[in-house]
Image (cartoon, rainbow, N blue to C red; front, side):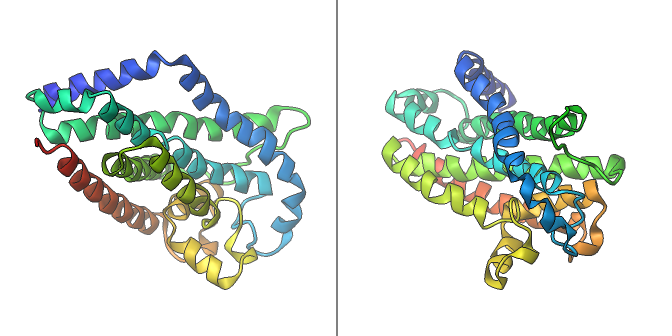
Length: 271
């Protein structure tokens, strides 16, 4: 199984590196988010003077830039299912099924590769946000707490699990749907609601109670809570520790990976 999985991962890698436009867009997207949106929302800094409004972040850009990690992890996974639909249309999936490769490897290869590649722009957001503190005229990410080794591992795990979850979700749509139009219709219906029903952009203290309740269980919020607690040392603003949020996020990821695997096995069943 490992040999077949390695071969399929190599195919995913070659398809990625042979599309330089996709590489450039995946790296430029976080930069555009931070420069155009993050700096433009600088007037929201007044919110951070309210007790707990920015959940311990020293300024709104710091709050926003950490939230963008979840947004990037979401947007980078949107095309996972589209690739499956295109592969089905070109007959590639049928040829893969005809090989000795296990069905689970055909599903696991795009899931693992896309999830790992999604980490690059996600952490690029954090790195660039920190660098902006040294650029005149820009507001940057101010890390007010030392997360330590354990905190750094929790941050890495949270982003990886979130990436796995979203890639599994959109892969499930890719295996279940037959046309790109249907796929992107569903994706566009879910993309922005998932983002705006989280605390990526807005603090729960500034939201209506019903919206804050939904955001508390949003997987994007769970991931971002892990990052913010470790980077800002703001545990008093959160109901649970980072470990609890990480476990809840892992539960979401497990659910969607199981659903995606079941749909993949059904789609890959030999007629």
